[in-house]
Image 1 (cartoon, helix red, strand yellow):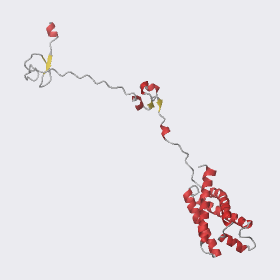
Image 2: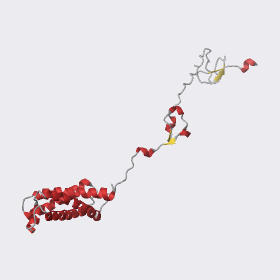
Image 3: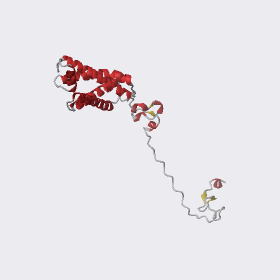
Length: 226
């Protein structure tokens, strides 16, 4: 009775069904069961897997940088995904004629001061035109400097209004280029009136470029804080 309780079973090499050990043939498929079936190979012990101390970092939370603290996700802190990006204020670039005029006035005054220093030592078409209208004034005197300031203030208003209407006021390169074109046109008009060559066109282009750049810089830095 005890022997029957511990009877061994072997698998049929053909169909795989279990048969009592010592049976000559399989009860299912009828094939002969050899008596010298090798025992199944011993199962290899499972390899010990090393615990990944950074496993918790796969979660949305971040663990302390020391891996010896373990991987308890309850001690983690949430990742600051926004820290990898730099937040910047989006500059406002829309402009109109009012913005252009408010930036053109200080730009014209600053440019007029620079041109006063230039006309203190150099006679140009604007100086010749003013002297032709009023021969009694000195070409390098204070009254001529007043004409210079008025001319550059007027030119600054024209360039500022044009930059505001074309919405180029907040763009340095485009504002400078447009100012240079308008200044060159104004210098060309002076050269045509005076009739002394086209040097006034080059001076007007530089003057207008400075006016356009100053107007854009004043609008961006002073009025908008960009």
